[in-house]
Every structure is written in structure tokens, then in C-alpha cells.
Length: 176
Ligand code: KMT
Ligand code: NI
Image (cartoon, rainbow, N blue to C red; front, side, top):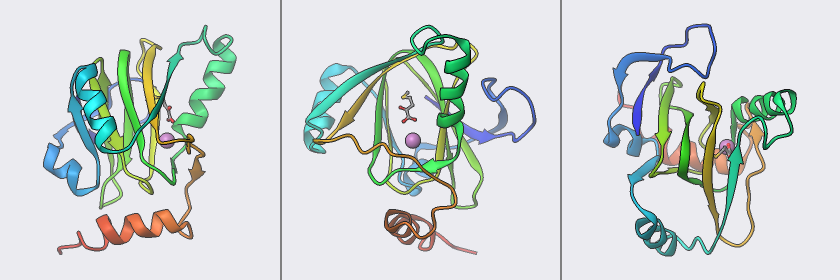
């Protein structure tokens, strides 16, 4: 996985948009993001520790979504800034994609994920997802008993999980 600040320049969001400023693993942890590069045994171990008993797989390509038009519609949903009331945990089985998450200064941090990357976005973090120009990703989605992937689009400041996230990772993190 590669993590850097998004350049915020116009153009196809499926391009890299690498500003050249890297974001370290410890900086990611400060905003509640965790990642591992691991094999299936590692995924099983982490899933057990965090009580993720269930999983499924998604295959995202224009074909699997019924053609270019429907695919682009789906991408719009993924790429609209939102939060969830539970962790979003994804293991990349094949292909590649970008998760963008807001840091404490409300900048986009871009995480490029490829095969073997396991990523956890905490509940309440504002984020979005998009594929790269290869237009293909296959991912495992882990969940406890029921998937809770309903997107709550920004602004969602009244959301309890947003407020918990802010008090744990944003307000405490203010230094200057
Ligand atoms: C999501 O919820 O944004 C997704 O499942 C994106 C695809 S998983 C790589
Ligand atoms: Ni999401």
C-alpha cells in the first residue's frame, strides 16, 4: 500500500493524484486507519481478533456491474464522501483501487491498495473509494454478523458515530 496526500487537482480521479507528500503508517494510525500486507492466514487471524465472523467477495469491473453506464453510476456512489457506523474492512484479492480518507486537517489522504493489502477504516471517518484506470478490483469484505455498509454522506455531524470518531481522533489530536 502507498499513502500520500491527494493533490486536489482536476482530472480523472482514477489517476494517481500523488502530491508527492507521503503519509506514514503512524500518521494513518492517528486518524484510526490500520493496514497490513498479509496472506489469507493473516486475514483469518485479524478477523478472529476483531470478531469478524462473516465475509463475502466483490468483483468490481464494468462487466460485473452490467456495463459501462451502470458501473460509472456505482463509482459515483463509492466516490461520494461518506461515513459508516462500523469499520469498513477490506482485503484486496486482485486488481487495485484508491481509498481516500480525511485527515485531522480535513485533507484527503489517498491509499492505493493492491493484492494482499488489508485495510481498516474506522467507523465515523469521512472517506470515498474509486478504482484505478485498470477498472478492476476484487475484494473480500469482512463483517460481524450483518453488513453495516450504509453510506451516510457528508455532512453527517449529528451522527453519533461521527461524534465518537471526532472526539477520539480529531479533537484530541489538535496540537496548534
Ligand atoms: C465500499 O464500501 O466503498 C466498497 O466496498 C468499495 C469496494 S471494496 C474495494
Ligand atoms: Ni465506505
